[in-house]
Length: 189
Length: 189
Image 1 (tube, rainbow over the protein chains, first blue to last red):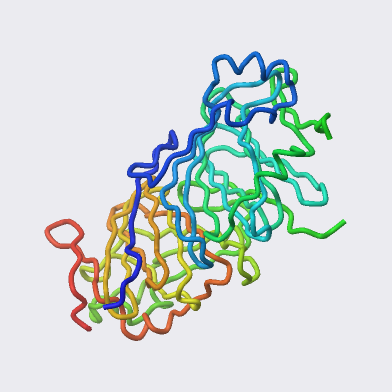
Image 2: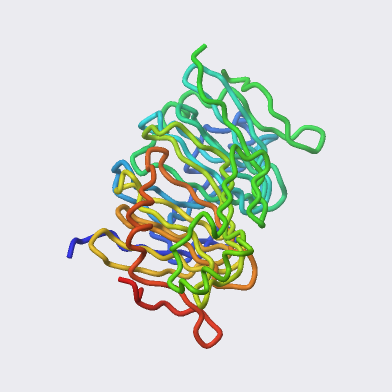
């Protein structure tokens, strides 16, 4: 008989843990130095090197058309200066690959930008389905006091371009103002 | 500026309703005559033409590589004879396209089959991530007493082949035996 990939399931917990995950990534502040606008606050926080976010992969498929990657991201609550904890953010290596996010718990903001600098920010919470269309770089931000957790599904051949965002950042930041989240222009752009 | 597809979000309720859905499909028994093994029970149920399942599409993208379709499916509780309410089931038109299911509420079974007749059944509930790999036809079944609801994400160019399953069915059925679900060989194959 032909050899097919066998179906499988995973339990996804509201805290983002995927049981029997294929792999887990952890991102501490030391893994993303220079990403926050307030360099003094970032330097001060570096001593304790806080966990910023974790990614559980239910499935890391071969990078072929037709397969799908599945993961959760848990962004912990916290700020570096006024800027909320966030993911690094990236374009897809194949830049026309889309992505689906589905909110599982907590509250966040999905920040996006096109190659020519159009920006967009969408609030997300439990039950929010958010579509990252082709060509939009994407970053998620925890704007609440609990972990912000979401499920993601992406084309297996999407790939990653982290360099562009690492170098220039996003055109907008999400910061705390008057006790709540506010989207502001990135002062470093 | 270049014209990009704009990002968007939808609220997905635990009952499967997607707010501001792009389109909704309803499948009554009259839309799937001949799918159930017990023809006498199907004929008896036809008079009231029950709603079997509904599909809310958050997004029906153009059928191009890189985009993703997003929908929920709500299968109502019930049986035709001993066989639980279920979806029609299909192969993808591009048969090597995968699909992700994510359980939102209720309890179900994901039934799958390859073109050469290998079968597989996976239980699903709230929080279950289920991967339908390339080449597997897929059908979902409500084995509980509440609506069974799940989110689905699939490559936009997957397409549908309903004809193969409509003609030959799946190699396995999910029926109630001794008060619970049991997977049996399809007596019509």
